Image: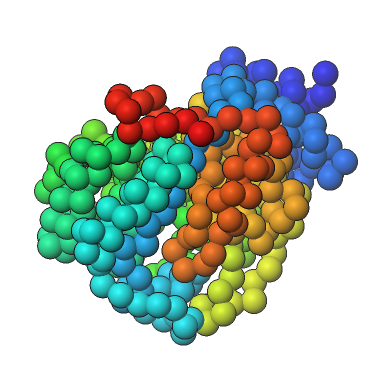
Length: 334
């Protein structure tokens, strides 16, 4: 039995990786990659079998953001030529839910740019969520920025199941990525939604000139805040942003990062997210050995792989879509 598989079984017994072991994983020789992935898959299979959760983003508000996040084409300092618009009407949000239902997506993610939502925007999202819940058996995730306690309570009352607020990077590296809000602001938002009984979704962006120790810190910080769902994004450097031209990643390292996330957060939903197409490239299918969740369709301001290709990838892997169990005749397994 390989070292990595032995370590995987130890994790299933409650063992937590040390920083040295985590660094050993990230720096493991490429000839050990399949063994690393096999260990990660042992853990993943224990909790999720061969099931894969599908997620879809609806970008309900684009650009117009006062923040200065260096990776983001929607920030105040970005010169990227993106489409900019205020929050979409409720009907458009409902159309997105219909599309998610047609793609057999389990979680529909309502995302809006900005530091945080206005009360009017909360009204619009809450109204849309109530109608979506009446029409479709979808899990709803909202990602609207920093919330006030009363706003979080209203989202919970409307039926929002999950709220996404990414840590994005390590506490140590945060000031190199943005200075318009603090790392603690992000942690506090995650804690607020947990207090409201909303499932916390929080993840990272890999490839922003962080160190491997930063990556280890990210994985352990997500464990500390007890995020239920962990989207792992890989930087898709966009022209016109401060990180324009950054290209630090290769597919093998990306797979090691996903594996580390699984070893450190064994029971959590780990999602291969933004940038997977341009960073994992032909090795995309291998990402689902450590991860058990994936986005389908487009991202916020970049295009994703065709959803039909994602479905074919799952078929080729012998994996199955983790459908939400139907409560009525609305969901038809395809």
